[in-house]
Length: 154
Image (tube, rainbow, N blue to C red):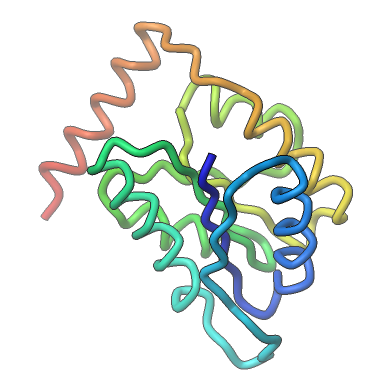
């Protein structure tokens, strides 16, 4: 599976650890930055390229996901959810990781480095990647409603 990953300064160390972790799991990882630690950088500059790549793959019917990282993961998810076709979820425990995939078919995982250890983040990434969308009718119906909102957005 293709995984795009990106962060600002807050998640730089975790991103570097997760790249190695994901590659060792056999994932095709594409780093969208930051490529060096810069305490003054801004997360939208690195999150948007991740999200754009996943959205472009969706249009081409390619299987990819994104992982975005910040201090809390909240701002990163906000940026991600501005893009049509993207369903980003801030994940902070096993339940949120599982439900974001099983019920919401999230294609972007947003992590906060100030709330998770590297080990916890790796465990959540594993669970998120291994949890399939349930394909239950009620969840498909709700996702279709989200898509309708995207298409009606001003």
